[in-house]
Image (cartoon, rainbow, N blue to C red; front, side):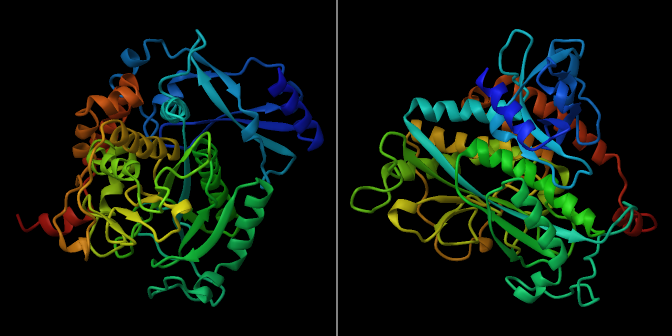
Length: 447
């Protein structure tokens, strides 16, 4: 096979001795195994199907056995040579390759989040359209915190002091963490990640990295890799990096903003623009789809119990379904751009998303809007934070929506929706069994 030859040459050229065989799990984190490079292409790679069905705590849903229709047998893995990258933090010459998952009869595994994204992209391909996306990733640097019972704190920077004030876009504040930034950029360059600008966001020790626009699957792979990379660069500097949506009570949340546009696959022209430079009917239908279907997929944009703490007024996170031109108070923003760069910025996803599922969900919403010719509301003018809260307030509420629209179920896969819902309900149940310090402080002797 040509792909095997490509991988073999890559292993030899980089003198790689060990390969990380990676599969994104339901949370978007890396599962897999290490294989000696000399055995990598000789082995019939397999992993248990169960790794796709685990909660963030490592548990399984009650529907695990029924939905898998298996006794936790193996699934087949196929390496994607386009995802081959060096692992710069490893002690020896190590490579990583993301693998696609297949059932034993050779079908794309329905529980693989990478396969879910491929399902959505295939719909666009049939329509002669090519989606283009550009993610923006926010995250926090925090002091090492081995005790989960203690609140997180910003790390000490070069000045010897932690941040205490909001320093959005501050150059000097970003330079406080220059050793981390240098390590991160060095790792990203070695891994050929297409990152662009870095800014200091509004939270204490909160940073944002933007990616160069490109193919959705490739960018999902890059974000998947980037999150590991940032954590490793932080550990090298004796701190943590976290992609929690709301890691600190008094600081803004962290998001994964997804810029998206559509090209005519034959001509390469942006179909969001008319020939006269106006926004097209396709653009408005796409926007209408995002407005209509986002409530159904919110659990993919906000996948954890912590995610819903981010949706509060006046802290750079949306609270309703409005859209607007260059309006950051709305969940769907249309940036100022020339016609060839017309695009939509989806501001709903948190930093804690599985990138494959978040990208699949936003593209699915836009696709349904185009197919059904869904009309959006009028563009919102003014401060959307002054409007009513329209988004789900808990993971449980959002999960109910995921099962309420048959079009979304058909696009993402019925079995996948069932398993995802089951997994996340287990997480929600586990979370609800935890008694918080707030409850002990205010209810112990007062009720």
